[in-house]
Amino acid sequence: MKLPGNLKEDFSQGALDADTLSKDPFEQFERWFSEICEIDPDAPNAVSLATASGLGVPSVRTVLMKIYDVNGFVFFTNYGSRKAKDLEENPRAAMLFPWVRQGRQVIVRGPVSRIATSESLKYFLTRSRGSQLGAWASDQSSIISARGVLESKLEEVKQRFSAGEVPLPSFWGGYRLEPESMEFWQSQSDRLHDRFEYTRDANGDWVIARLSP
Ligand SMILES: Cc1cc2nc3c(=O)[nH]c(=O)nc-3n(C[C@H](O)[C@H](O)[C@H](O)COP(=O)(O)O)c2cc1C
View: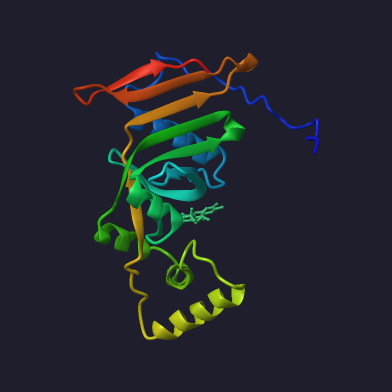
C-alpha cells in the first residue's frame, strides 16, 4: 500500500532550550500539559503505555492518565488484564504522550506500583454509574465468544447492584508510574529536533541532558 502524498510530517513550532526549560521535570510537564489542554483538549491525557512480560515480550496500548503530581502518573485498569500480568512479572513501564499536532512528545519511564485502594475508590466514585458497572462486567483481556457475553454480564451486574451504590471491584484500580526519567521532545525544522532528558543523579537530584534527535 502506498501512503497518500499529502500526509503532514513537519510539525516544527517553537524551540525548547536549556535556558527556558524548567529545572524540575514535573513543572516542565505541567507547563506543556496545561498548554496542550488549552490548545487541543481532545484527550491530551491519552497515552501509549508500554509494558513487557517477564520474558521481555513487549505490549503497548492506550490508557488515560488520570492523576499526576510529583509522585508520578496514574492510570486505572483491570488488575487481571494483560498489562497487569506484565506488571506483576516486570513492574516497569514507559508512558508516551503523543502530542503530534503540537510537534511534541513526552516519554516517562520508571517503576510502576498499584495505588492504595482508598485512592482507587476515590477515583471510582467520580465515574459514571455506567462506567462503574462496565468495570465489573469486563474481564479485561480475556477471550469472549461474542459481544452478547459482555451484554449479559452487564445485565447481571446491573441486577446485582440495583439496590444501591456500585462498589469498587477488587480487581480494578490504579497504577502509578514513578518517573526515573522524563524526556521532552520538540519538533524543529530540518529534523534538528530538540530533546531533553531528565534523570536522577546519585543524590536523587534531577539532571538534564540534551539528546541528539
Ligand atoms: C482512547 C483510549 C483510552 C483508553 N483508556 C483506557 C484506560 O484508561 N484503562 C484501560 O484499562 N484501558 C483503556 N483503553 C483500552 C486499552 O487500550 C486496552 O485495550 C485495554 O486496557 C486492554 O489492554 P491489555 O490487554 O494490554 O491489558 C483505552 C483505549 C483507548 C483507545
